[in-house]
Length: 105
Image 1 (cartoon, helix red, strand yellow):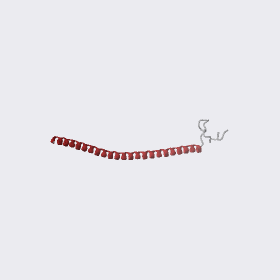
Image 2 (spheres, one colour; image 1 turned 90 degrees about the vertical axis):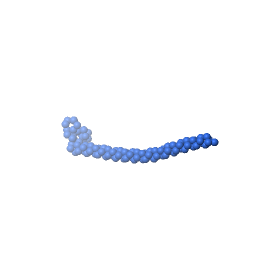
Image 3 (cartoon, one colour; image 1 turned 135 degrees about the vertical axis):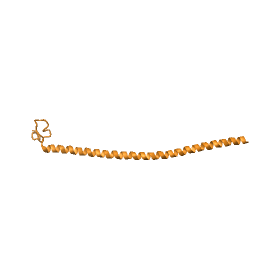
Image 4 (cartoon, helix red, strand yellow; image 1 turned 45 degrees about the vertical axis):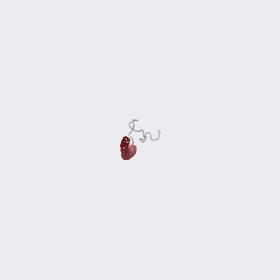
């Protein structure tokens, strides 16, 4: 016999080889290992969840910053458009005054 064979301590015992039952201690050990694995998985899931929350907060902050930058840029674009419009008006007025001055000679 190999180590633990036929003693009920064999990890394969009770799994269909003659109907032997697994020792209660071994069953408890398996259950404890499963519980520890579940705890590790839950801890990893919790860590992943916290990372996701932080990433979402970072994205929200970036969006807020981007929105502010876009608003500032739009104000600058609006100012440039206004200045171009004013320059266009002044140019046309200067052209008209030049034409009038030429005719007045």
